Length: 109
Image 1 (cartoon, rainbow, N blue to C red):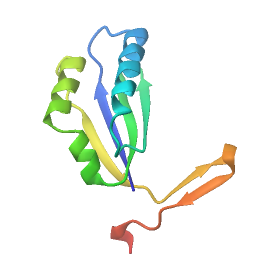
Image 2 (image 1 turned 180 degrees about the horizontal axis):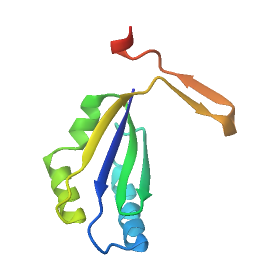
Image 3 (image 1 turned 30 degrees about the vertical axis):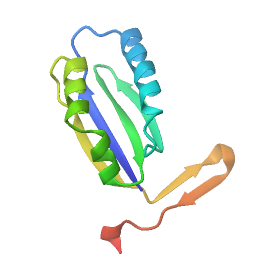
Image 4 (image 1 turned 120 degrees about the vertical axis):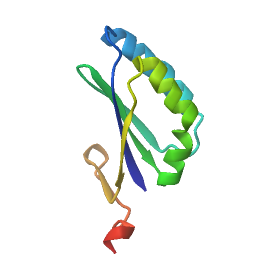
């Protein structure tokens, strides 16, 4: 299980409302990806992005192919995405009193 962090600089002049509308449209499209476990849309000023949970890095890379990258460039005015991958060891959901352990990352064993 992995977490993928994708961030990018937004295009000049985009409003919060426009970015939110793009996220709404994107969320609908991501529902069709059966590999995707979760996606969280994030924003900090002029930086946008998402936190994804995938079963593997390979699944993330399949979804974020050249076509996806071209779409990011088009939406951001040419700003390329920065992508980082993290092994997901455990998740904690206090509202449900649930802890899910995925085990140590392969590189930690």
